[in-house]
Each structure stands twice: as structure tokens, then as C-alpha cells.
Image 1 (cartoon, helix red, strand yellow):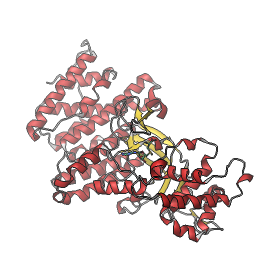
Image 2 (tube, protein in one colour):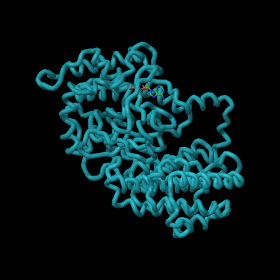
Image 3 (spheres, protein in one colour):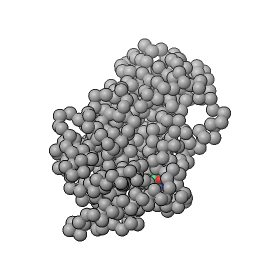
Image 4 (cartoon, protein in one colour):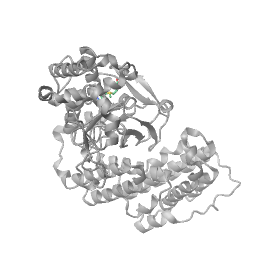
Length: 527
Ligand SMILES: C[S@@+](CC[C@H](N)C(=O)[O-])C[C@H]1O[C@@H](n2cnc3c(N)ncnc32)[C@H](O)[C@@H]1O
């Protein structure tokens, strides 16, 4: 999937980035990937990264030699012990002088040693690196001397190993050590340290502490503070580092760069820029940062304070729930609650954080549709613009699934084919009924009507079977629906309110099943 949906492209400014090779819908699972190397922070298992205080039954096991490194269980110790010894980490941890001299780079140095160990003779040497910049005083937040001291300690750690007796490893020179260190600084991802203390996420969700992990494919993705791809981590006892999954959260056009966020996107611009400097040593030039930095002098943040905190926490909690696919319905409910609370406190629906929230909710709706979970039951309390957004996301997914029914092996959807029918129908019914309400002119739609619309049966009688359903007819019908819906929306709420998402699935409905086509036409024919 990864290779067929994306490719690497050279950046004119140097380096490269990954772009989509086809239109990627929101909610698509793009990649699952194991870690190349990982180094957890103190208080968590050195192998699987689980926080030691939340692990369930096993007792932590310590390294008998350095006594500095802990594993959550004998299973993880057994899996990681040789690596810990063979990469020189154990020796490094024993050196109190080293720990004092490179304390700010100790985790990076351990990860670099583990990367060296993992990559001997393999492909990770091709990981990108900002070495030239880092070593020439050009990078923010770090001095080349600090890197050189850390590289010196790494080399000493490797030098103390009996490397030639392990035939798959090569001794690392000083420049090699520096290269691995710079690769780590350029590419390592932090395993969500900010989720650990969140009280709303107790009960096994805030399971990782701050671990730094290197993934081969994910390291090709540039950062954006408004990313179109999210990543999550799956903990597996006995495995070195969590497994990462990448999922699109917005539709991504062919040719558009795929981006993830290396930091917490909910933080204000100064904090995001600060974290990127501190951890990754670059100044972010993404579109959102440029806009927000340009607007900063006249910005008035204080008026937002009453709803900002709740909104941040709510997006955060919903995102975390969404990371666990099984909890998509929970993520959706959390997003719903957050949306309503923020609106009630006067937050404008067009605020960038509300857009972030709608991204999370839309993804949740997509995942629910995929798994045939009832996504429409929550509609009674959604804001109307959001409801349209939400139903159409589910309907859009349902259509993709119905395509899968016809195309079988199309893009990995075949496994879902046999189950697609009911999700498709539920979502399509919801969409058509919402359209009907809009067309009937009952605007703004009342909560009870919305609730009803999710369960109302759709009559197919308006569309006679001898009507020819060509793509052009369908497009025209949808366009008319959209225009009318938007006129109503704008009359009620003013300019800038649009049911945009329905348009976004237009190119797909030409492939949709006859049944769906009839339903759409029927809704449209009420105009
Ligand atoms: C993990 S790599 C991403 C892929 C990399 N661009 C490459 O050439 O393979 C991270 C590096 O890309 C660059 N980068 C990524 N996102 C950026 C952004 N939003 N602004 C500026 N530089 C960025 C920085 O040099 C950063 O250290």
C-alpha cells in the first residue's frame, strides 16, 4: 500500500519528502511498520517502552550489570538483553562521567548505538541526516561540540566491545558515531509523552513514557503543524519498540506531500516551534506556522481562554481514543461532546481548532463506517454543519466500500467486501435524509428531525427504474443539492458556511452502486 499510494520526491531546497500518488481518502490506513531502533526514557521498559507503573502482572527486571536499565518482564529482558550489551549501551550507562557530560543527549546516544547495532550491513545508512547543518553551528538549539562529545562517548562504548567476534557488526569510527547521532536527531519520533499524565486517559491508554523511536518509512515524512496523516503506536510485549500505524486524516490529493506532526499540534505556535527546535533542531516553515507567526503581533489569545482549554483536552482525548481503532465510536462521542461544549461557550465553528476537531471526528466516522458501527446515532446533538460533514464522511467511506464490493481486490478493500452492505446503507440513508430535510426547507434542522433522519427509511419510488442514471445526471443532481443546501445554510448562518464535504465525494459516486445512485437521485429530485 505504502509503495503504491506514495513516492519519494526531491525537494528543491535539498532533502526529500513523500507525496501521495493518488487521491487518498480520510481514514485510510497507509502503513504499519516496526521500529528499526528505540530507546525509552527512564521509568519504562527498555524493550517495549511500556510505562513500568502501568504494566499488569510481571515484575520489572533490571540489567544485572549496569543496574540502570529496566525491562517490564523477563520476556522483554530476554528479547533485549543481548542488544543492550552488544550495542555498547550497557557500558555507556555504567560511565558516570559520560552520564554527567552528555546528560541532554544520553537518550539520543543510546538510540544511536542501537541504530548502529540494528543497521550494521543493512539499509538504515540511507536514512536522511542534517549532519552538515548540525555540525556547522547552523541548527537551532544545539552546539556541534555537544554532538562531538556524545559521539566520542558512543565511539568509546563501541570500542569497549568485542565487536570482531560478532560477525555481523563492524566497529564504528568517530565519524560513523556522529552520523548515527545526527540520523537519530533528524529522524527519531517521540512516542507521545504527553498522553502519559492525562487523567482522562487512565486505564491503560497513557501507557508509554517518552521513548525515541526510528522508523524507516515514517522518517521520510516531513512535519506539518496541520498534518494530513496521523500516527499511532501499538505496544507489544517482547517486541523492540512499538509498531507504528499511519492513517490519513484528510483527503490528500495526488501530488500533495504527506505530512505528520512531530509535536503536539494543539500547542500554540511558539511552543510548537520551541519543541521542534529543542528536539529536532529545525525551524518549522509549515504553512500554519508561517500564518500564525505572521499574525502574532496583533493576535488576541485571551478572549479564547474560556473554551480553549476544554477544546484542547477534548481533541486530545478524542485523538487518543481514535488511535485505538476499536474505540472509534468513543472518539466520535468525545469529539461530539467537545464540539457542543465549545460551541456553547462561544467558540466559533470556523476556529482552526474546531477544524482539527472535525478532522478527528471525521476520521472516527470513517472508521465507524468501516466497522459498521452506528455513527449516526449521535447526530441529535451535533451542530448542523458538522452533522453534514460527518454523515458525508461516513457515506463517502461507505461508497468506497461499495466500490470494493464491485472491484474486489481494489486497494485492499476485499476483506471488507462482504460486510460493506449495511454500513453503506446506514450511511447513505442518513445522508439522503439529511438532504431531504435540507431540500424541504426545514432549516435550521431541529435536533429531533436529525435524530429521526438517521433512522428514517428511504423510499426509492421517486426514481423510476427506466430513468437513466448517467454520471452527468448524478453530478447535476448532487450539484443542485449542494447549491440549495448552501443557500439555506448561508441564509441561516451567514457567509462562509458550506456543506463542502458532499462535493468531495462527487468523483466517486459515478462508480457507486445503482442502489446508491438511485437514493442520491431520489434525494436530489425533491428540489
Ligand atoms: C524525518 S526528516 C523528514 C524527511 C527529510 N525531509 C528527508 O529529506 O528525508 C526530518 C527533517 O526534514 C526537515 N523538515 C521536515 N519538516 C519540516 C518543516 N515543516 N519545516 C522545515 N524543515 C522540515 C528538517 O530538516 C527535519 O530535520
